[in-house]
Amino acid sequence: MSHLAVPGSGTPPPELDVGVDVRALSVRRGKVSVLQELTFAIPTGQITGLLGPSGSGKTTLMRAIVGVQIITSGSVTVLGRRAGDPALRHEVGYVTQSPSVYQDLSVEDNVRYFAAMHGRGREAVRTALEIVGLSELAKRRAADLSGGQFSRVSLACALVGRPKLLILDEPTVGLDPVLRADLWDRFASLAAEGTTLIISSHVMEEASHCDTLLLLRESRLLAQLTPEELRRRGATDDLELAFLRLIQAGPAAVLDGAA
Image 1: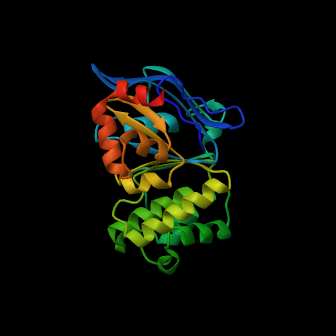
Image 2 (image 1 turned 120 degrees about the horizontal axis):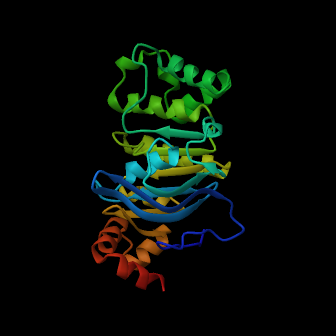
């Protein structure tokens, strides 16, 4: 994927379908600006990484895309509909940092519950458990799981509905490197099958698995670019160092690099 965008010009080329279209999005809480004039578009069937320091507005942006965040101005369109439209309930999956799991139910029963909400059967439950590596723990009570296992139940509950758009807020936190790598392979398979994924992460190595990256800083969109472009603009193959150089340089340097 070679398309790049900078603030104000985030439109994919015409041959790509748009899964998420954000225009001049602003969110304020009292006198505090949480998001300021964000404009970008995310193509369908790709993985978009959402990166930025703590407090930059990543979670608020994800909530706006899901449709549960009150926005001050601008617009958010998801799969051709206004964000939060009831018609999107079975099309959008959202996994927060706080697991949404019934602790007194087994792993399998949790996933079966969400499967029923989406009209999915046992095969969908089995597949979701396989994807997150919990098949052998299907009968275990959720309350008896480790922290990493517990968070994976939430991911399985989101995956079982096979959403067209999957939004994940730091889904690999607390997972061992082997499972983290396996999950990214699964995410790539989902994207290849047409699912659009938006994934926030503080692990810069994970940015290399994304098709495009959204870089946020101080409530603004600093840049939309590929991992390769981030390396070029940061003048290093180290993605973490490239990211730090870019956010420290500020928007003017980003715009100069896009010229």
